Amino acid sequence: MTDKIDISLQKAQDECSRTGLRMTDKRCNVLKILLQASGPLSAYEIADQFKSTFAESLSAMSAYRMLDFLMQANLVHKLETSNQYLACSHISCEHKHELPQFLICDKCHTVKEIGLSKQLLKELKDSIENTGFALSSQQLELHGVCKGCQLIHAD
Ligand SMILES: [Zn+2]
Ligand SMILES: [Zn+2]
Ligand SMILES: [Zn+2]
Image (cartoon, rainbow, N blue to C red):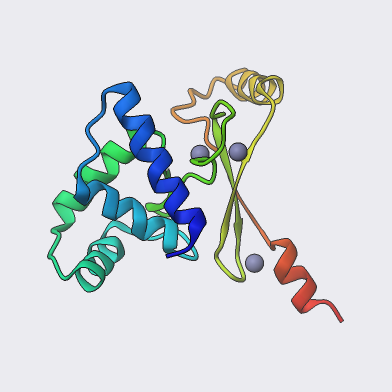
């Protein structure tokens, strides 16, 4: 396990005890799987990896329950368009968590979490709601090609 994952797990534990959330070993292990993953995973993939990594079975139902907990704690985010989960990239950060937005690479399937300015998001929301459309989520999931893949595929 790399240091960055260790630090993030420790931070996650601290943050949970500070806010009175109960971080169990199982929840922590689900988070560990997502921190180690190279891209977003579905709940079924998480349950599979849990089984092979920790030699302990995890039903999809409990995977969903643990993911719900981790999402409430802002440690994990869900991509609504693909029903996949990923670890927050700011767990080891000191700054306040922003409304997360995601840049999804269609070549290597990595996802970058970015923060956009509140003002920009408000303008976006206002102009969408001006059309009479009621937004249920303000999460953006934008597709494209990441910097690394652009370099690989350049001539
Ligand atoms: Zn985040
Ligand atoms: Zn950060
Ligand atoms: Zn890529």
